[in-house]
Amino acid sequence: MTAKSKSLGAAKRRDMAFVGLGPHPQTKLPPIKEEPLPLGMIVLLQQGRLELGTRLYSMGQCSILVSPPIEEGWGWHLSIAHPTRYPAWDEVAKARYALLPTDVNFDMPLPRTEDYVSIHANCFHMWESGKLRSER
Image 1 (cartoon, rainbow, N blue to C red):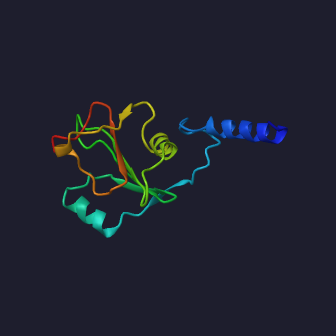
Image 2: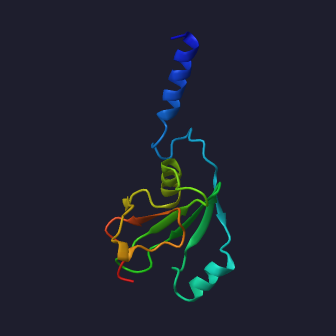
Image 3: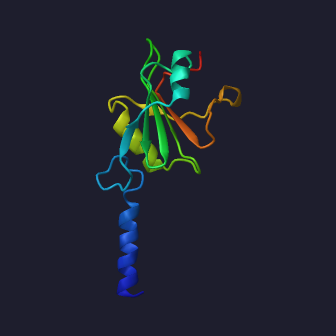
């Protein structure tokens, strides 16, 4: 093994060490930007099919929706989607730590097939621990 290949291997391991660490200061992800709600989402808000206070964000090609607790016993919800693939773990972690309370735990459940709801093929949902909204 040459010195050059050793240094490339070390660089690759060093880069891999940042994967999955959440909001690490050296994570090379696009910034999160708040976006205006499109008309279709405003209509859903007016119909009561989307929680009041829901905000839309983008992070590169990922779209992120964050809904605050709407009543006692109902917690925070975050959905993150990408148009062509599943969101990467670092994208999920960055959105979670940047947009949701850090003193609360969150789950990414795999519900029963009859309870599964998603309007986007490449979307993950995150719910405040112990506060799923399946009763709706």
